[in-house]
Length: 377
Image (cartoon, rainbow, N blue to C red; front, side):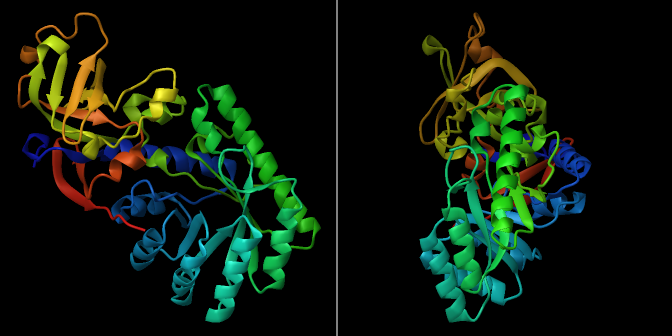
């Protein structure tokens, strides 16, 4: 099956690019002497994650219990559920541990710790827990210098949990746009996480794991002294936001949405395509970057970027493609006749992939393979 035989819109993986991305990250982690635990929320696909494991990844990171269950059933037993535990989910999580999954949980509050301990006592299971620390003010976690850090660790240990260590996520790295800025936030993430681990150890608490990660900091770090593992997810496909942070080039983006030209609005300079926000997602992450890519950047069917062309607008099932380059919109009906196949590079690979049930895998000109992905929580 060739690209022009696929129904549109559909999600396409360029397998060669994906394999390049997997190898690039693994080489960097190996060179820095740390374990790599990919975040599988990006692909939610066993076929993708098996390639990451085969390249050298050790364990996986998930963001939903559905992911944990699906990947455990698919043969992955070393799983880190890297979202602070909701009390209503703890029993379901511990049921996986009872089945033999080496499941790690995370908390960043005393209330969360108490919920984990209560469920563990009820199930007769010793939970395995990391404490999330805030290294950049981006989202969640205990402030590194807060007494609450040791307080949570002490309560977990006294209550019957295994306190494995600390974890962090430098999400502010997504706002960086230079390699120097990325290097600074990567070192800040490392240093503050190692400092937090030191506070726990000084209080007599076990802290074997120091887990950090985001795709920009993982690829930008030059040394990771004191860190035991790194987590990253979107690197497997990359996207336009990652290109905007300078950690990848457009030619490394492995995910795209195949679409078909279905009409023209010459007076507006629009090409109409059959991929709207239901296929592309509403994510406008590049809007905050130096170059706004609209709802996605346009390529021809083989995957070559068409300079200046973006999806400038999107309705549910319609996309409007336009170009900022002077004169480029002349004769659009001749340049892009109805039926023309185009590929759209996504702003955010995770969000775009979430709109689809499977991936069409492109190897050379062959697009006959289809890899399922799953959804839900």
